[in-house]
Length: 205
Image 1 (cartoon, rainbow, N blue to C red):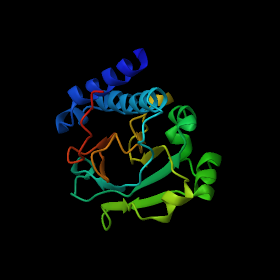
Image 2 (tube, rainbow, N blue to C red):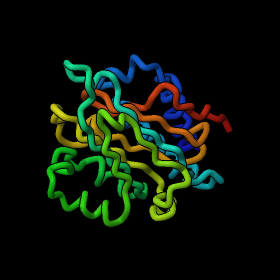
Image 3 (cartoon, rainbow, N blue to C red):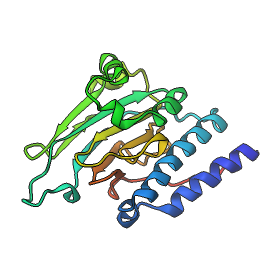
């Protein structure tokens, strides 16, 4: 019972934070929200493991935000990787250096590519890309419980440890998202969940 209340409390906190765009414009808040999503997913997955909800597939779109524009108004090239993982692997990805990951010769990135990942080469001619819910990667990931999104943002070195805002780790549980659409923005110093992404309304049992 205490576990259920804990899960409900986290979901209610998530609901109070909301999806207002001004919140996601602040790097510290984005880090907190990202960690809250991971915590909520883990709590709900462990405590409410008996529920019927499980991993789902989604149309996951990533778009370059206007805040990335250079003085001449153009968008820079940005590499974005999307990887499906198990919940047990969250700690490894949360604590891994994003700068090292995009260093050019990183073993973890090579391993992710070998296992299957969505590589999005965004830029002036392609400011957005989508991993569709029908993509074969979802099957290759074998019902991924979490999605890791990493962005190599030009001119921004991020931070060390698990609070690097160039990384988002999101749950794939069908009771977490309202529908099969997730929109992500790449901003000048962070990744954020777009306000257009419908969230699931917390349910009281």
